[in-house]
Image: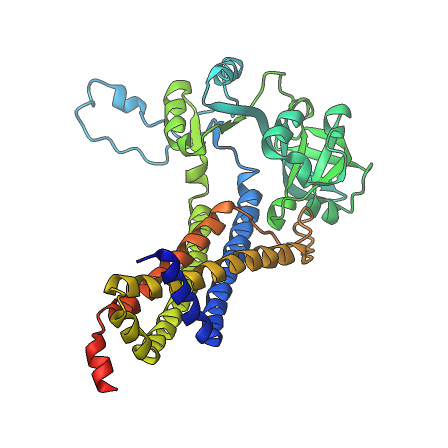
Length: 419
């Protein structure tokens, strides 16, 4: 049987019940539109939330942790080695937080082909002196250029120029919450005190806002040189080395390797943000589930319409089979009808889905907690459109296959005799 003739018959049947056809196509269009818009918005939201954490979190953090020694002096005694020794109230050793031999470690990391980049850091516990009141805080001593390159530091500086931190001696970028509590403006000079009682005056050259309010009330930034001077430490004093890898998924394995190699703690991003990653996965799973449910519902609509069309077109099907159309030809006709609805509705759905995504992307989203965000986030990943298009074809194919199977088995003699 010629495919042109099959297509002509399918087109005639489609146009004979064009209102039902239109309803089925609208169902597919609506489903694809909502699928694209929902996935784009939910994944855009995931990207935004991931950015708040992942942009500020190294893939691997090397640091020195003060902890009690696992081997006590009594365990080293040959006399008591075979005993079970119980030692209570074990105190940690008097050690510095500094990463020893950090220059050699940094040199090795720069030569590691798995490492994308690294940024040294100093974490200093301080008090912000506000008149007679001392506010607890943390000053992060950073290499400004490395921090901006790897962690987009400038995106979170909402006042002043982040490079002033490097160019202006004894300067600080205050957390937005801390600055508000201290009523400190740009150019103001604040006083900070370390845990050892060392005091220093620092000039405010910017404000930092991460979007996490509790952090912004405590956390501030200074250059590594300024922080070393504040703590009274030498120029080689470093407490953290932040590492970004070329492949994020290698972080747990590489962290274990660095722990054994450098004799320091190595915290990978998966361990540090396990709960956050779970939340992102659940949100994506829900959006996929809702979108696919919409497509399946549209498929059932097409199935019902084609089923009704078969009952209404029993005479036409009988005539087709009586004039030489085989069961496979009838099968192809109704599958062609279903796929035509799927292709037409799917293409319109992809187009409208993109339009709705653009519309969402233009809606203002102004919040003081996220100054870098101006509109609702949307992800335009091509895979959403591919999944939507393929699933619309698969759904409509099966929605047409079962009614067409029934139509192909109709006996024309029984239908004509009944008439």
